[in-house]
Figure 1 (cartoon, rainbow, N blue to C red):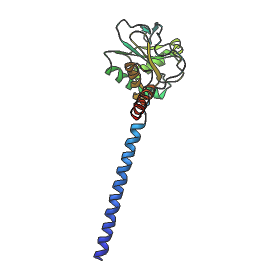
Figure 2 (figure 1 turned 135 degrees about the horizontal axis):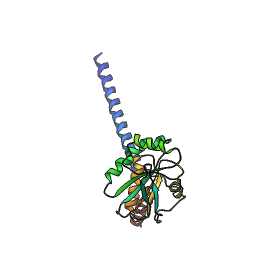
Figure 3 (figure 1 turned 60 degrees about the horizontal axis):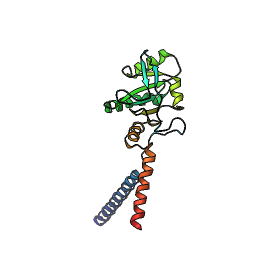
Figure 4 (figure 1 turned 30 degrees about the vertical axis):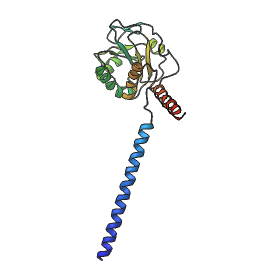
Length: 211
């Protein structure tokens, strides 16, 4: 009986050790996959103004009747992030606090403007109040959306202080929004392009070392 217990305990310990090794191996593979998976930046459409082009200045009245200047060089030297949203877009509602948080983090160099079109003015005013956007410009302009060929929401456009288009794209997460800032800072249009250039650089270095 005692010998049976000893053998069973030994077998159990072997199984525990084997399982621990399997878990460690899986954890290592997950880490490798995480490093290899490229970060997902904002999805940039092929149409509309190109990154690097100078944007046209527009004067648009916001939902409270105040005139907002969008595009062109900013007199205050600030970059402008335009967030296109809609009361009928559920993703927009969840992402608005993220946009406000990002704007607060970058407040020394970035101003945030919300934009939409269609529907009644009263509905947009109620929508902006519910999302605590009263301190941000909120404009209704079909022309603005058409100028950047906005077809899906939420969509963001980042204009540099010099009036040039720095980045744009369909955004669904904070990472997408932050990728627009990264694109502006690096001077590379998209995060995907940055990853591609990085991988190309690594590949070139490997080839040089091999030769």
